[in-house]
Length: 345
Ligand code: SF4
Image 1 (spheres, protein in one colour):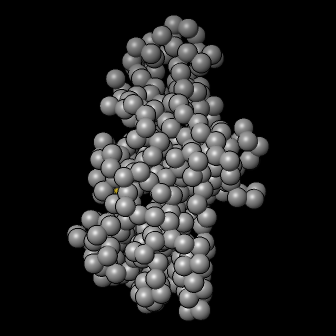
Image 2: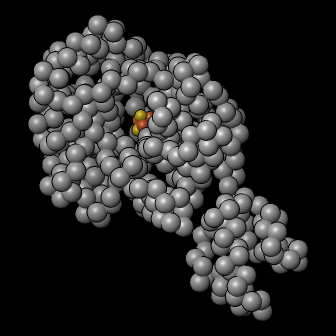
């Protein structure tokens, strides 16, 4: 059955005209769907009961259901959404001062199999639809409001899956999240974080998608990167650098790099030197991330003194560096840890 939210207002108007109903019913339905964001046709109480029954016969209104909420001692919340076909999709709310960042997923599972990541171990299940990506944002926004946060400060597509391998649906979702019909959220505050799918980094620039872009780099050394991120074999570091150059030339935007510090693997001064050299391509910001250790992964978190030295080195090269403390370690906040523990298809 067709999802009623996939219809435009003129399409809903046509439906009502075709069944001999007044056109104004379409505006009512549209308001229930997009302003009141109801999840059940029965809740459209301004429609007569008979009309609601007719709609239920003709359309579905599937939603992701918020099923698991785990609250960490540091305020981080991990949310497990269940899809109608029984996948667990992970979202995270990360508070920081008056800000609240929402991390959402573009796919159920992931095909890229990075060796430090729990989602990679689950394998790829399927792409999420634009509405499923959108539902994560509305679900997390509702929870944030319940925690007295007025608005999400950033939305990061960085949870389960690779956003640039679900390009069309992610673009559609970004439009919905940023349109007045959806949530009216500034696209600049939506961050797409990719493992480095070069073809689609260029496409973002060509399509002028007005989002912010982050690359999960984790090392600027191609050989090392191949060991932890198999996607590097088809998207080598040099090609990622070329795609970033292209992106910067076309958009003028600064890029962010995510860099997980893994003990004795990518946290030496020689790694920092390689990273600093790579960062010469274009203006950038580096987010160093403390690793949330994952069961079955050979990696450990970098020692605090190594982390500090690494950061100081980059700063001495005039690079903008943030250190992101590990969040939600007590609630399986590393991507894929929650889904791995709950029954799915
Ligand atoms: S880190 Fe990201 S790209 Fe790599 S396996 Fe995990 S979800 Fe996929």
